[in-house]
Image (cartoon, rainbow over all chains, first blue to last red; front, side):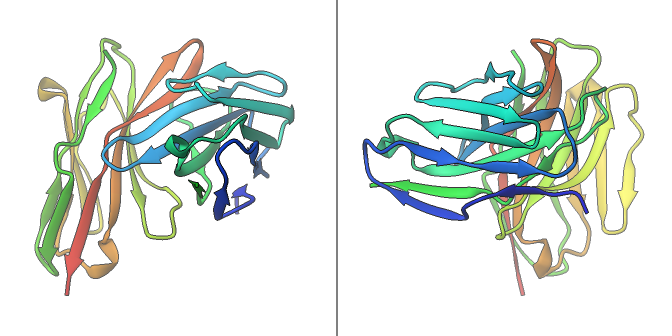
Amino acid sequence: DVKVTQSSRYLVKRTGEKVFLECVQDMDHENMFWYRQDPGLGLRLIYFSYDVKMKEKGDIPEGYSVSREKKERFSLILESASTNQTSMYLCASRIRGGFNYGYTFGSGTRLTVV
Amino acid sequence: AQKVTQAQTEISVVEKEDVTLDCVYETRDTTYYLFWYKQPPSGELVFLIRRNSFDEQNEISGRYSWNFQKSTSSFNFTITASQVVDSAVYFCALSLIIQGAQKLVFGQGTRLTINP
């Protein structure tokens, strides 16, 4: 069964800390994505990656960076966490190809910044 | 603008009622896909259906059905004879090619509660 695994289900961090959210997929997918989910706003794209060592900004990249050193792992980095980054973070992956290839999502990491 | 609107923030019904979740989208593209995902309390988004812009046939899968109408840019989702296990947040999404990569644009989500 294909899987996207996010390393932490819940995280509590202090303002100003550097935070790493990890995502690993076992499907050999080229494309990977980081979304954040907030009530009333749905899911918004932070960053995505076409393939290893590639990254592109999404709709709300400010305050975030990413790393994709290996195909299976896509890390989201909060350089200096702030309270407005308290949210649910969802990672997804998909195979490179046409429109009809679907996304597989992880279970999410609920981050609280205090 | 590329946009998905789910106007219903929350819906609450009694078990066995039918319920329809609305989805309206905007895009200038002629080729696109529409998706519905379910997010149960566990958090993981579960794929329900995918429909391409050239296929306006309605689809039925058990108690679930989808009505795609390009004329009104809508892709509505109906659950017949709802059950408590249908309680979840449901997202409609539009798939586009942006900067050479496919991206999903999500609606705001509809929280559906089925009461016993």
